[in-house]
Length: 328
Ligand SMILES: Nc1ncnc2c1ncn2[C@@H]1O[C@H](COP(=O)(O)OP(=O)(O)OP(=O)(O)O)[C@@H](O)[C@H]1O
Ligand SMILES: [Mg+2]
Image: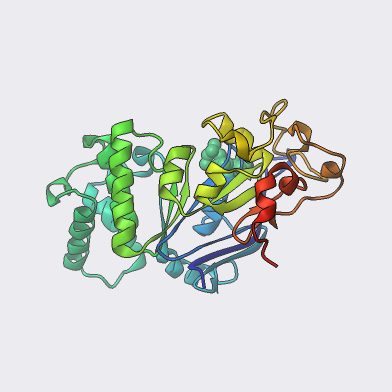
């Protein structure tokens, strides 16, 4: 059984009397213990909303989030709080997510105060020091405040705070995007090391394709709340199947000519997130659009034993795939 199972999540938002935005539209995926699943896709595609649903910070309109088989969407608030210690998070802006008036010791120890009230002060301090050591900081930092620390150190504090309750899954929502390039690499190496040491699962959200390629086992590509393509990361990034993935990657990487049919560019701008689509949400922009694309929803469907695509033309556009086994 996967550690995390997300099944048919739908999440809509409505601002005031404005139109309803379907931020997450029937999304399903799993994360195995000790592995990393990445979510990629342009700004506003729904990645952070998926993250918030997984963290129990946002209740979905419908769908299920299971940790070890327990459905977080079905349990009462009190039990949910207890479950939350098995899934923690590290966010993009370390400084914004750390209270500047608190000491490092209080920040790192806070989740323990919430989730493990029985822990004595001494135990708590030991766990804080232990957590700090895990991220390469010493007890000398305990009395400091976030403002005294560098960006990299602040993010290490964020990671120490996420680790202290001994989670099994950590949601990493662009954990290195606000950091300098050199610091980025050290934080990623740290996350990698922690994953192996504790057999942690990660849900990793990033705009940085090279990092995703290095870091994650499986990848899901999002566009306007929909999963367009999923599969092993190396396959999705080196041999993208969906026209959206092809277009997104060819704007950042050079995509192998043989694996994809030209043209690769999308037309026009992204439609408003409030648009209701009868068919594929990419249809109006897709260079491969045919009438069928607009007529009915295009569900994510298996194209090989490990990959799925939400495009009616995938096998035709990516000829190499047809020779691979398609799961029944
Ligand atoms: N609390 C909210 N109220 C109203 N709309 C929201 C709310 N949170 C998210 N949205 C909308 O839902 C959609 C998805 O947003 P989300 O933040 O999940 O995207 P994202 O993929 O994380 O984007 P980014 O890469 O910029 O972080 C967007 O259209 C956004 O405006
Ligand atoms: Mg986001």
